[in-house]
Amino acid sequence: AQSVAQPEDQVNVAEGNPLTVKCTYSVSGNPYLFWYVQYPNRGLQFLLKYITGDNLVKGSYGFEAEFNKSQTSFHLKKPSALVSDSALYFCAVRDMNRDDKIIFGKGTRLHILP
Amino acid sequence: EPEVTQTPSHQVTQMGQEVILRCVPISNHLYFYWYRQILGQKVEFLVSFYNNEISEKSEIFDDQFSVERPDGSNFTLKIRSTKLEDSAMYFCASSPLGQGDYQPQHFGDGTRLSIL
Image 1 (cartoon, rainbow over the protein chains, first blue to last red):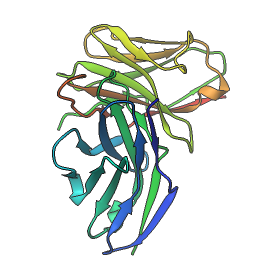
Image 2 (image 1 turned 120 degrees about the vertical axis):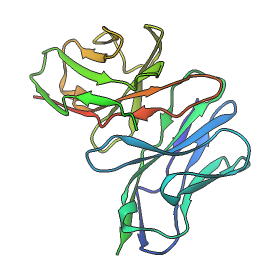
Image 3 (image 1 turned 60 degrees about the vertical axis):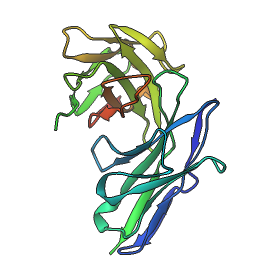
Image 4 (image 1 turned 30 degrees about the horizontal axis):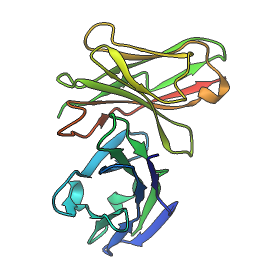
């Protein structure tokens, strides 16, 4: 069965410091992996995806994520955090060989300290 | 940039009543989805819809739920007889393609459903 784990409920980072939001996944086939961000009272916004190719993918707002097949991880990173990055971040996975359903992690609240 | 729009933003309904949540997906998209997020919990898949029929549904999507694309632009989620545990944020999403060259799903801002 597909599953996604985000082990941290909250991550606190000082502004200007690098940030990492962790995600591990489990699928029976090859994964499609995604990161979405949710600002208060807003829907989920797509940040980036991994389908195939380079393990390091770049997305919106300066975010990037690294696909690690051996560790089944897809951690979200940013070299220098902004206060405006404070939001709820969701990792998601879709099994490439299955239908369109995406499975979301429970979310990690990112709090950037000014 | 085109957006998925959902109405209303907040719906308050008495338990046992029927409720219809409305969504206007992005116009050239072909796949449509409903998700829900109970307060403080993760986003859960409910149903996907393609070519005027349900393509996949979760165990949450029981006989109380139905979806419809009545007029080629709207995509609705109906809950026939609401229960307290249906209180959640409901998100609609759409994408231009499903399998193959996968495109990300675009989400609306959600409808907060409160069952009294």
